Amino acid sequence: MKRLRGSFDAAIAAAASLTGKRFGLLVASSVVTTAAIVASAMTGTGDSGALAALLGRSLASGSAPAASAPTVESSPSAGGTGHSTPTPVGGSATPSSAPPAVPPPTSPSPESAPSSEPSPTAPSLPEAGRIKHVFVISLTSPGYEAAFGETTQMPYLATQLRPKSELLSGYALLGDATLPNGIAAVSGQPPNASTQADCSTYAEFPPSAKVDSTGVVTGTGCVYPVETLTISDQLASGRFSWRAYIEGMVDESGKAASCIHPDADATDAPLPGAYASTQNPFVHFHSLLDLGDCATNDVTLEQLPTDLRKAGKTANYSYIAPTPCDAGSAGQCPAGAADGAAAADAFLAKWVPQILASPACKEDGLLIVTFGAANAPPAEAAPSDYPLHVGTLLVSRFLGSGSTDATSLDPYALLRTTEDLFGLDHLGLAGGAQVKSLAPDLLGETSGD
Image (tube, rainbow, N blue to C red; front, side, top):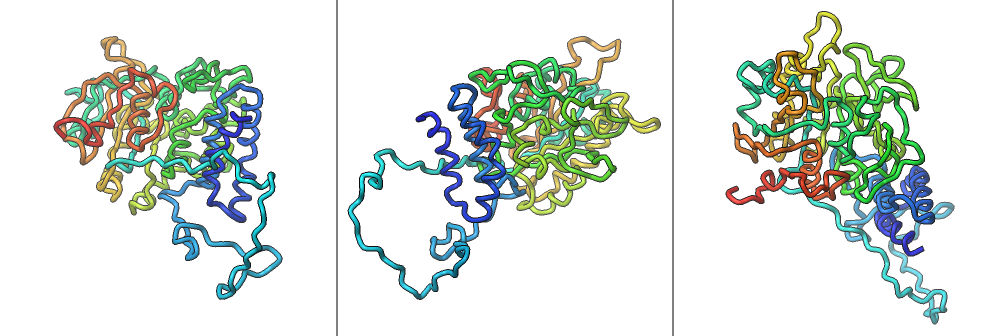
């Protein structure tokens, strides 16, 4: 029972300031997670700590993270830091001029005596450093030389954006498929047989799947169990905001919609130029699907310009993914449309200037233009250049323009860097001893800054 109590302490503390209808709604929305925590702790299996963090995140954020830190409604009687007191049901509030009733002193009974065990206190929230807005654009690579070389196939990327950026010339993928790199970059989970095949079937992990000491889910599957957390869960727990802007998401009627994914065990076979769930790693996690965060924050790309207009409306973390066609995946565009690297370069030329001109990015932002997949190499290409060596660009006023960092990096390093920028713990394999974080340079913590 001590283990069970410990798992709930953080969640109870996070809920301490919630009252009334909002609390009731949050409790209802968190039933599935609460049940999982109880089962995990009582049976001694699973990771009840991660589950408690998930429930605490849900209670603290209301399962509806906004694009900026939530505003707390102040109450004069609470020193300007609490919530307004609701009127009791079936009665009226006591007039402010009436003195409070003071009950006569009584001797404490054994049952009401104070417990020797300290009451849970709200955990301290993580803090961001000088970078408070991170934008990630994920594309498909034509190969390092084809992207950044002298005979580039992406002229906007190589000749206009590169001079403003730091080039991570040692950045490489875990494999050439889209989904395993995206999942690793947002959760630290390694590839498995299903994700390496880009999850052509939207399948759950089997009940026999285990979670090891690093939080990695063993076995094969596409939709991760509720205790498997993502950078989005971490940000929401820390009262930061996040949004995924995914191009082309529509419902069955063709209307723009949020958090689109196949039905359980259904196949995902998108048409040329259309949305594919492989571009959207967030729809593969029950931690986001079950408590509503995906429906709220996994939105269509068309919403990005509105959110960029004011820094207060711009999410702390924005993940931007085009359709496979606009990402640069060869053979994924309608007949007659620009294909491959040309399509990806046109996407960057349209969206990057809007991001860089936004108040949030200019003030304290970091833009990461990376590749989450790679096209098959042409027959004449050197094997060493394909498909894993792809490179990545970082753009920020806190970095030198035209600089290069040749450190060996991968999607786990991108996740660890983002976690460190916001003061978060490391998920999955992002916590590995050999995983490099770029946060010290970005935060000015290295010598010479």
